[in-house]
Every structure is written in structure tokens, then in C-alpha cells.
Amino acid sequence: MALLVKHMLGLEQVEREDIETILDTAASLQEISYRPVKKVPTLRGKTQVNLFFEPSTRTRTSFEIAGKRLSADVVNFTASASSLSKGETLADTARNLWAMRPDILVVRHSAAGAPHLLAKLLDTPIINAGDGAHEHPTQALLDMFTVREKKRKLSGLKVVIAGDIAHSRVARSNIYGFSKMGAEVWVVGPPTLIPPGIERMGARVSYRLEEAIPDADVIMMLRIQLERGAGSLFPSLREYAIRFGLNPARMRLCKPDVLVMHPGPINRGVEISPEVADGPYSVILDQVEAGVAVRMALLYLLCAGAEHEDTDQGRT
Amino acid sequence: MSKERKILDSDAVKRAMTRIAHEVVERNKGVESVVLVGIRKGGEPMARRLAQLLTEIEGRPVPRGFMDVTMYRDDIFHQKTHPKVHKTEIDFDIEGKVVVLVDDVLFTGRTIRAAMDALMDFGRPRSIQLAVLVDRGHRELPIRADFVGRNLPTARGDRVKVKFGEGAEEDQVVLIEAEENAAEPAGNEGGK
Image (cartoon, rainbow over all chains, first blue to last red; front, side, top):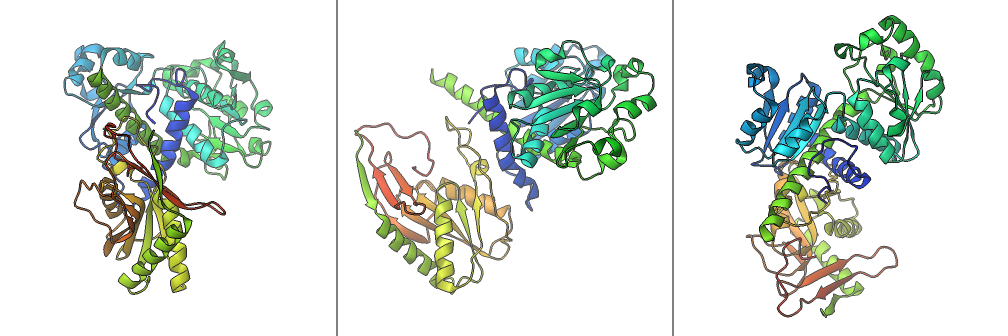
């Protein structure tokens, strides 16, 4: 039952079998959050360090709650409070942290590949909580979990991811994840926000929402990442909202059982109108809830995997 | 070759279950505040069976739930292959109730310890009792069952397989004897 992978760096390298194990385990663990005592003793005595070099509230909080529900000791290490501003390299920061004997590291960094570098340097399981525009595997896992709970399957579904694909690690991880599980993934947005060659990852491309959404089972709206310079790639937010925003008129084109998703934070009135975000198709808050269960599953499975590797070495 | 021996056949399982059901009723003077919690996976079919028998005897439904204790085990990081985590489904309040924990085989007692810890996270029961179909000995903790279908002397390396048949299938309990000089089993998963 342990995973084939030792780290969760991205879904590109993860087998379908592992994704299923994580989603099944998350489904069993979700109930813990509804108990009078929302805690199990599984990771008692384990130290989880959340290493966040980039601002995040929801992902960090979700990882923190997940760790605490498993009784791990959770330590938050954020860039603003760290010695990065004093000129220390990522590798040195990591070695220093490792000397404090963490059992699992959760890493977010603005540079793609940062968690992979740490995985090479350190002998501790690492979870990528978002690296640059590369991958955000736990977001994709919680998205798949949410869809699977609602649709009872992933295979054969049509998933449309719309918005700022170019800057989105969420899009990348979801393309890998949903494709591996047998879903058909479409990406939609203005040509300037769709990276050339994305078809090679297994996604179909469209430049019009009206073309992609009528037979979609899932529509995932992404935020325009203005902080990463997306604003210079289209005329104005108002025009973007008119052409690519998900609004009630466009919802009328959709299947009656379509799911509308958003990884947050949402920009109401830009990529999604308030009526849709709060409407009956929206599963945005289910996604947030799924995040805790999926992260609990991953913390548990990776910590257990690490222990087994140690015992194996002891025996040979 | 390891030897297989049938310990209880379908009729014997039925008689043992009926006796356990009557003992539960007698001990608790009815089933008014009794709830059943089966430990997954082995205790699940037994809890269903026991709930059905109690309902037939007392003429009132007895709440039953199921619990997975993996996350409470003390050997979770010691076993080589670790068990799949199953769902816990207890959709009633256990506060002030008599909880009868149900499992098929009682062996080291570690599963029951984990189950009692887990139960406490759901509320404060008035008491916890334990019903098992087979007590095979070799306790590692000070735990005993209140209701036992059959006491079965075993060697530590033996395995006990309990099957509650569905529909036309037969119930049975089988003892698989360990080979001479066989290594001690690494796990202590209820000896299944």
C-alpha cells in the first residue's frame, strides 16, 4: 500500500496506480474531519516542515490542518521570516533545516524544479506545493478527488481547463493527472495565454469557450496571473471577461450535470461571474474540503514509505 | 505443506452467533442502549450478522457501524506491507451507549486496543464490550473478550481464517497450522 514514488514532485512521473492509491486513501480519511475529535494519532512524533518561499494562505493552511489531523508536529517556515533575504542559497537553507530532522517537507517555490533539487540533496520525503509555473500536484489530486466523488469515475470524462494556461502549474498537473486517469483534457484561452506545444502533453486546444464547453463534464476556470505578467498578453481584463469569462449565458450551453471548478483565489467578474461561482454547478468549496483529505493521504503514505525503505536497508 | 483443519462449520458458526446474541441481550438486560461497531474488515460481516440476530430476538433495530483502525495501530510503521485504509462509518452517537466491539478473531489484542482508542474520539460510551467469534490466545496486552464463540488453542505461527458466507455460501472457521520450525509471522494482523 505504500506508494511507488518516494516524493510527490509532480504528476508527470507518477503512475496511475499511485494516483488511485492516494485518492482511495483520501476517501477513507475524509470522515476524520467530521468527528467530534478531528484527529488520529498516526503521525505522532513526526515533524512536518512547510517550507514556503512564495506567499500562500490556502495551500499552506490546508497542509497544516492535514498534518495536525494526523498528529504530526507542523512547523511553518516562510520566506519573509527566513534567512533568504540575508543571501542564503536554497541548498544551504535546506541543509540547515535537515539538521533539525524533519520527517517530511512540503515545499513551495517560485522557481520550477526547486523541490526536485531538494529531493536530490535531502533524505526526506518531499511534497511539491507548487514550483513556479511547473507543477502543483496536490491541487490536481484534490481536483481529481472532487470530480471522482461527484461523477464516481474519471475515465471517459471531458475536462475543460480555461484561462491563463501559460502561467498555470495547476493546469499542467491537471493535464498530466486527468489524462493518466483516462479523461480527455481541453485547454481554452486566448492564444497568447496558451503555451505552444501543449498538445504534446496530451491536451486538446481551443480558443473559444463556446466550442469546448457544450459537452464538457468538468469546467475548471483559472485566474489570470497578473503578478506573473499575464496582463500584457491581452487588451484588458474587461475584454477578457467578455470573451473568456464563465457567465450564466455560457452556462446555458453546458450539460445539466456539469461541474464548475476553480483552484482559487477567484476573481469575481473576470474569469467567473458571481452567479456561476455561487451557483448550483459550482464545487469550489468541495475542492477546498477535498484538499485536506488528499494531503492527509499523501502525508501518511509518504511517511510510511520512508519508514519501510529504512527497514529494508537495515535488513540487507 | 501446511495443514488445514476446519474448526467450525456453518451450523456451528450459526449456533455460536446465536449464543453470543443471547449473551449480549442477557448481560445488558435488552438492547436499548446497545450499539454494535464492527472492526474492518473481519468484524464487518460478523457485526451485520449479530445486529440481525439481536433485532430478531428483541424485535427492535440495533444501530451498527464499522470502523477501520489502521490509523490507530501501533505497528503501522513496522509492517512491511501496510494495510489499505478503509472507511469508518459510525453514523450514530455513541455518547452514553454500551458499545459492543465486534471482530472475528482475537489474537494479540493490539487491534482491540487501537479500536478502543478510536472509539473514544467519537464520544464517551458508558461501556465497551467485546464480542469475537474465535479467541486464539497469545495476548500481548491485558485485553479479554466478553463474548466468545469458540476458544481455540493455536501456535503463534498458525493462521485462523473466518468466512461469513453471503447468500448460499457456507460459513466456516479454518485453522491453518504453521509448518514445523516456520518463522514467526512479522505482522500481528489479528492472525488472519
